[in-house]
Image (cartoon, rainbow, N blue to C red):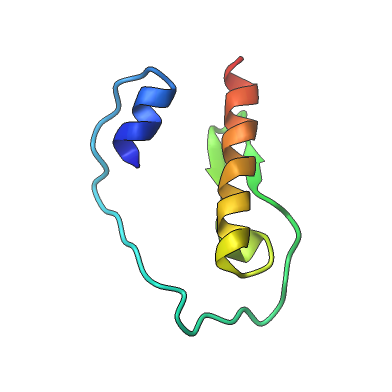
Length: 76
């Protein structure tokens, strides 16, 4: 995904120092949020994940889409 993102924004980026993936097998958040994604464009921080939207894998996907939309909006 790192390479695809760099290609999407047409920018050379260093490889990540650390990355981790895991399954949602027994993930159950204590509470549900409807934030979509969190961002501070001035600081260049964009945060997304299942915990930002419903706690399910679909929420993770939609949260990522929202973070990407905000980032692209900021870049334009």
